[in-house]
Every structure is written in structure tokens, then in C-alpha cells.
Amino acid sequence: MPLSEHEQRILAELEDSLTQQDPSFAKSVRETDVFTYSARRVRRGLAGFIIGLVILLAFFSSSVPLGFLGIVLMFVSAVVVERHARKFGRASWHDFTRSLRPDADATADGQVRRLRDYLRKRHSSQ
Image 1: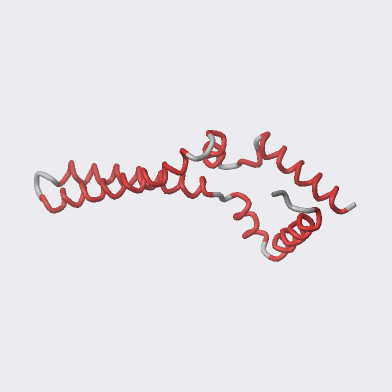
Image 2: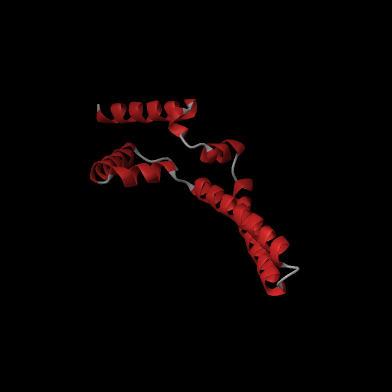
């Protein structure tokens, strides 16, 4: 169910208040979504998997416990990657690629979104 004009106006006032009180927090909330968080976790999981593989290859012949530690690290990293990659399956490809771009507001989509927000604010203030 869409928000009424009164609810939209209240929400816009809350957003403006938050932006004035803490601009850095407001910016991070605007730019971060579940896909950004999941993409970060997938990258860290892949890095952990590679580190585990290097540990396994480097130490398994000389120290079995260290080699086993590499296997455990690879397994945990694979579980992290799989768990967070599932969230991408629920999203469209556009949402996924938007979270990987460092400056989404510089793209045409970001400019259209900012223009739409500006026009909404201007329309609601009249």
C-alpha cells in the first residue's frame, strides 16, 4: 500500500532532519543496502578461501594440523560465500552490479534517482 501524502511529507521531514543532524550517517544509510553488505562478505569469503588454500598447500606436507586449519578456513569461507551469494539470487542483476560500483550516484541511474527525489521534495513543499 502506498504512503499517503501526509506520511510522505513526514518521512521527508525525518530524512531532512537526519541529514542535517548527521550527514555522514545519512550518506552511509543511503548508499548501503543488503547487496552492498553481501558483496563485501562474498569478497571477504573468497579472500579467506584463497588464504586457506595457500595455507593448505604450504603447510600440509610439513605440518598436518596447519594443513587441516587451511581446510577448515576454506570450508568456513565457502559457507560464507554460499550464504551471502543466495541473497544475490533474490535480487536483479542491476541491484547486484549497483552495489559493486564504488560511486553509484555518478551513474545515470544515480542522477535520475537524485532528480526524482528533488522533484518529489519540490512538489511536496508546494
